[in-house]
Image (tube, rainbow, N blue to C red; front, side, top):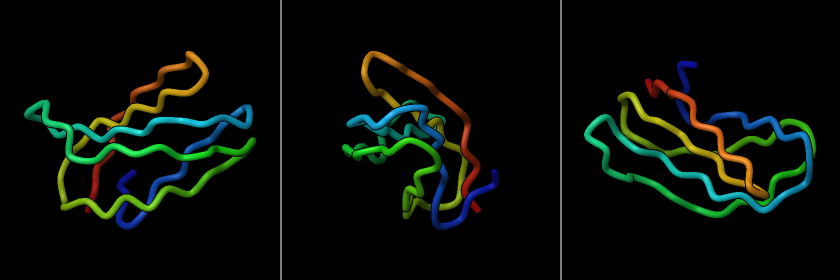
Length: 70
């Protein structure tokens, strides 16, 4: 953090995940499905500069982190 073109999501297992980016106004600006593999996964974000909350949902696991995009 800060990110520019991509973020890295670490996963402890192979899983199909839903990744959602929400802006500070609470609006979903990007949401997509991604097959994650064990270890680090590079996710291309293609978002405008700003602050977002990124939520990863996989196999009942839910994690949200703040992402700053330059």
